[in-house]
Image (cartoon, rainbow, N blue to C red):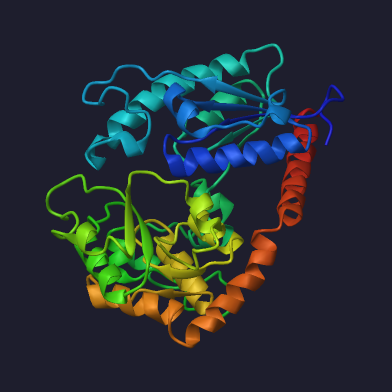
Length: 377
């Protein structure tokens, strides 16, 4: 995996300003560095302090560049990640600040004498490919969606706006694509297609009441609602369940929690990062998909008998507290749960195997290196 100067590659990474994006990019940067390559990871000063912890042994290979955000009207002071926003309506202002600061910083890095061999970007950095191309540096989109879900939306050409099969209407998302060469029922439901990019507020009280009704001990990473319509916790909820449940407000170190011996199940929105983290720790999965590709992930896991999806109304996607409780008990209490437990333990041997993961990274880097050589002529 040598570059034109006989050394290792230098890769620049630009994650979006969300904890669920900065963290996996940081972990990937560590794996790349362990293979001997240099990484420049861009984030904001506050996110660096909160999230990015580089082991001393990799400090010489990973350069973390702090990119301060400019002042933008309506963006709260010190807001440097989506979790800092009191309302999702403020996301466009965070994006505006991100675009201004990170586009400028990427241009500066590309003009350095030792320019990077590759730029790897998150979904938000739409301006990065053109900037990299102006300097003759290849750029790739490092998707946090799983490959199976991403392929549902079309070929790479389609995703770049160059091919056929573009999904332009909700109806296109509720049928299995014609190019899938095997029988499957994995597709979006009608309510998911309609609400993909504008999700409803999660009815947190129903989840709370479902946890109560399930009768199981729990730890809940609870993010308070950003409006008054979705409701917070039921009155007296924490006091009533103080001996059985713990409510943690804000962000929690999810991987550390899942790795604890006391944790056997995971109620998750079925984002790919969370699924991979749950499977790596061998915990049973209860799936409550909310937005984007999460419904596809949930269908796929249910189809493979890896997890249980919370039952919902097929027309509007609503669910009751009893639906939450039933799914949790099915996985954790009923006899059927043993089958799910055995399945995830087997998958943990793959998802949780560092050597398997490192081999995947080596193969990925080999592709980058080969493409870089071709790009250099």
